[in-house]
Image (cartoon, rainbow over the protein chains, first blue to last red):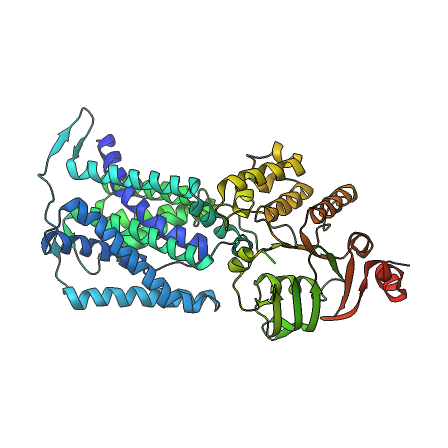
Length: 290
Length: 234
């Protein structure tokens, strides 16, 4: 029972981790909580759904196309809603982010309607039985893809020239630009990657819970944000850890306390961690620069 | 090589530079001296593009660069070592140096330059894989200068290289500055330690409250009554 719940939590948590990465990467670079990120996730799920059902694109291709389309949406949101406010107060950008979130949600409501859509199962449902737990084919795919994406992201950030430029930009934008790094380009790339990961989570949750709605980004968006703060906002391994931890805690809370309290358990975890370590699990103390 | 004409700049409504003009010729070390807060750092920031001037022109090889973004200015051959060193603390020494060469594509030459920097600053070679934040102040200054050299600048802007360093380190850094210049890099040096700056430079400008009040050869400035009183403590 316990190991079974642990597996369920891992599956849910890996989707939270993917969403949290988008928040944390954007925050790391421009210190903005991108509240439209939950809607990017929702858009990814719809893009995947439409590609599979209307355009009859094979599932795996649709998965990557949805990620690419969400990247474009993320870049557009940054360009239209955040870039013009780069030099104004942080509050202005935050309000613009909330506005972008409401706008995208209503756009989806207007085009798609409020009724839930059913995501067709892309493969024959199959459940594997092991000594300690059962796991479905969909769950294996979610785990596999999430971890591959996270490993890929880590390698990209650590090893490539652009990854180094992203880390440098997160540490000190002015000095990074003195190295010849085009800061605007790095911000665009950050939004593209973060949005693609969010959309990947959206499609995977779509095939997991089989429903897609315009408001589906709200709660997972919030949970992804919680996971990012839990791990230490701006910290990439922290977001991965925070997501997994949140998923496991939530599933455990639902299993051993009450499934009605699953969200309460998630937020209680956040409050507890922040009380003990205000910068999050892997966050470092911030110093105000003069 | 570099010509600044009637440049004014500032932060918001506060004007920090009032119509300053200066020139730096190929091969020179030119220093800009003055007390704290007179606009020396602002001048360098405006040249490297971190700050947009309100008016006036900055010409590099006779091209106006006053509206050019910083990353393009690096590509043109100007490298700026900012005040307070500003190495990337959570990147390794090697990664910091690699980022110095970000705008370049000639991989083989970058490798050679990397080896050259390691030879100039042997302390950095020992700490290659350490994160830059763990280095001492003097080592960070070396790293910041080495990183700037990795872009193969024709003009190097140095902001207070002596700041916060032990006297022995300061002398070492200034020897290296002279050596970099001897190998063909033009240098514009901002420094509060007027004595040291004027002994290193060929020419100097003296700034007071956002204006240039004196310019002459370094030797002449060292003899100048006003400079001796105000900046050399005599």
